[in-house]
Amino acid sequence: MFTARSPVASLSSALLRGASLRGISSRCYVLSALLLGICAACSPSEKAIGSDDTNEPAPTKPSSGKPTRPEGDSGSDPSGPKVTGPQPTTPAPTCPVPDYPQDDEATAFERLDTRVLDQTGNGVPNTTAQVCGLNICLYGSTDDLGVVHHVEHADLARAAFKYGDGLHYAQFARLLTGSSEYDLKDQVTVAFPDLAKAPKLVGGGSLSSGQATLDVTDSDVKIDLLSFPDEADHGFVAAELDKAKWPEAVPADQGLEMLYALGPLKTKFCPPAGLTLPNTPGWKKGVALDLLLHIVDTSNHWGAYGTFAVVGHAHVSDDGKTIATDADAGIPELGVIGLRLSE
Image (spheres, rainbow, N blue to C red):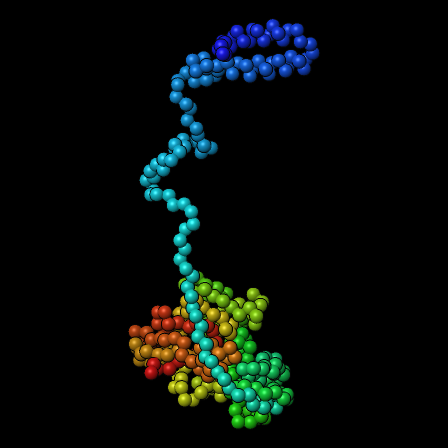
């Protein structure tokens, strides 16, 4: 059985024992033992020196200085309940791109001669000039005068002469049918405004170029980095084509009355971006319109390669001055856009 002893008695006894010890290190050892003995000898009624006079335990305080709540007590918070753990997130919008399956038979191609001009009649130098089918693409470019002389044998499925880079000049795809050799008359495109002065193509606002305004406030912007890896090329550019100078790539049987080129080519938006254009044809206010995209990509999204396919809808404004895309029916990507009265 252990008998409780007072701290003073313990201290006196230990000091007497320590007197017989020799050396400074021994005294230090004894002093440490004495301090431990004092704390161990304290009973509930005999508290260690420096303890509180009350029987209540001292509150534990975190570094903020506020008392912690007892374990298991969620407490109350005037600002509302605290939510812990993973939080629900709003799912990102999905914008499926429809495919347009094609199964064209390959035909022989041997030669193509033509010249590429801008809207002022000048030759377009050193721009894309390819002969592309769904299966093979024959790469090339214009010379310093815009001339193209392409000689190469290939079996191409749904061949088209594709010209313009989609960044400095609008890109068109003029279908090639009925022969293996082609002497085309001048093929026309349009020059975009100076790219160095173009607004940066990023989401979260509106951008303007060539009297066209693109609204990407709520759209995710995805530039075709394979074609345009340089960030300096990521500017919004737009230009309207004079109807009297439309290229052969524009079909005469689709009722198009207005043509606008937008770049960089194949930049995609999800959700589709809003677009506002001047009402150049002079349509009456409130008139409903179709927006058609010129399909220059052989992946066959939206429609048949080399054609125009409906991708959105628009209306003429109440004052008759502008054309704006309908809500949730904007443009899914940049390229050459044609407009016509809704069917």
